[in-house]
Length: 194
Image 1 (cartoon, rainbow, N blue to C red):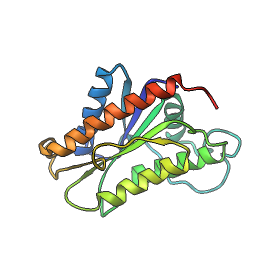
Image 2 (image 1 turned 90 degrees about the vertical axis):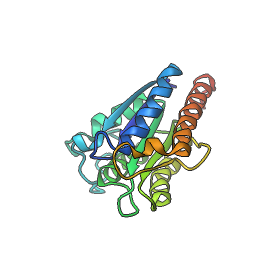
Image 3 (image 1 turned 90 degrees about the horizontal axis):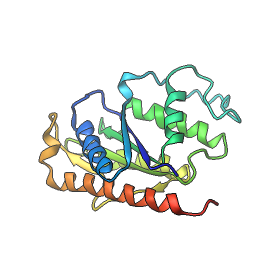
């Protein structure tokens, strides 16, 4: 099991509250000697899934865009964190395309993500965060992930860039996510392979 985490920022705002939360987790993971990379999905091209089934047995998608590079990062990492702001009570289209496509490829290829650690991170102005959390958590649940919890649901609240830093409970939640992810990755590293 790799002691590394790939983190996806599903917000188009490079300095928004989703990015702030992910950077806080990244810094804490790196202090714990866990490599962590943040990938800004809005800077990439990941088209919607067509449900064609062409990925079966190939371990990659037949569409030619940035998804296969992201799959390689996901397969190399021990942990995956998917961050999204709350848009109309849902994930952003960048996150939706990632989880649909990566999930389909994984399921058509003997559950490629089996026994990896995963968790969502949600930024919200006020409401809708539970639905976003559940959407991303459903991706982890159906793909054999070990899911990382925290001291509260994985939310931080703020509207304007940087406001989430003032959410003390949200920031503590991000710290706890990082600590729990690091603990689980170390436990998985020494666990016998099934």
